[in-house]
Length: 444
Ligand SMILES: C[S@@+](CC[C@H](N)C(=O)[O-])C[C@H]1O[C@@H](n2cnc3c(N)ncnc32)[C@H](O)[C@@H]1O
Image (cartoon, rainbow, N blue to C red; front, top):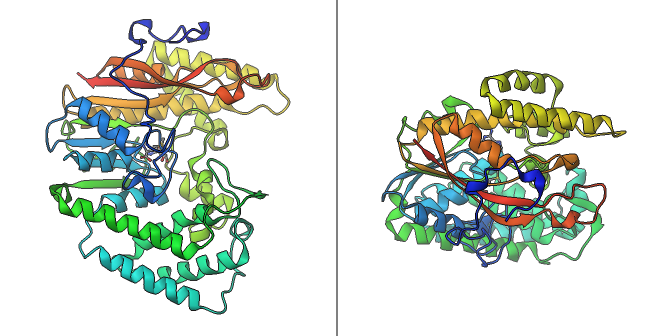
């Protein structure tokens, strides 16, 4: 239950503890992010908002029609998608991060061959990689060089080059992802989420990259095999890489044809999804510089971090806010407070520029979602609030207000868990009790 006065803008009537809605941590190997053990989630651990067993629970509670279409405008690694397929639904998702969109699409595609072939190929390539005598590490990125001991890195690079060389094969992307997910398992520096810290040494969780890679391929084979065995293999599941705020990216979904949405947008907490995957991006060679990461990986993402913000975009967004009436004024006032707080600090961060841009993007995305959903269809958002420089931003509440302008009705807004406890007692941080909330909007 919220107690802090600064939460007053949240509609009290919908803020009640609700036994029907459970915490996203299902108790099966996770508190936050994708699960280490759930099928498909275990392919790569991504900061996800929820794991697929939780998404399954939600989809079950929403009582969507059998075979109905589930959508997710922030698809990430495809947790909602795999849960939807398991429950017998079709799926359409949009994801801005190119590498992560590739992963989601891979999980949701139909594997046309015998999945065991994957394991056979992986074993052959691992043997070849182990037999390689000289591996040239000269062209590797600094982050890659600093993250592994030389012997481990030589085997990783050797495997990568063998996989990359066979990019026209069906198995190529599976083996690529098994290898990318192995990186954090065998690194000898701190590579946990959200930041990779090549300066901080640690004992690798697994010592042999070859056997860990094969273990990961074996999981994939099991997970793909399970889908092939049941009817869900024939369901249509698609992932579009791009910005879900752009209407054309939804052109595969007919107006009013989707039956439900389960999603988790980026929170306003300065978490950078591009930077968080720097290790994988640099290792595979998708990006070689920070500027390339900004231009190629971040370009379709909504602005949720100060690093993405700009004066011009913030000014444009402030103009758009004028169209949103009272809630636009509320966002504008929060941005003014944040600007004041920034001015009080020697090197204050530009949260005041992030905020308008973020909510204008959310508005566009909700607009596209409203077009896609059938009348009466539910849309669940798992989203946290935030308090940069102590200014409380009720992100879930503001999202709900924006939604009501676009033909949604707010049906439920419940606290799932309190968060931000690690800043407790830190005088430079906010002292507001933050929460992750479950917001259920319904299409009128
Ligand atoms: C909390 S994560 C969602 C994780 C997801 N539930 C999963 O299964 O992994 C939010 C995602 O939104 C993506 N994103 C940010 N802006 C976007 C946009 N404008 N369009 C589509 N995706 C976006 C981010 O790249 C990130 O992967």
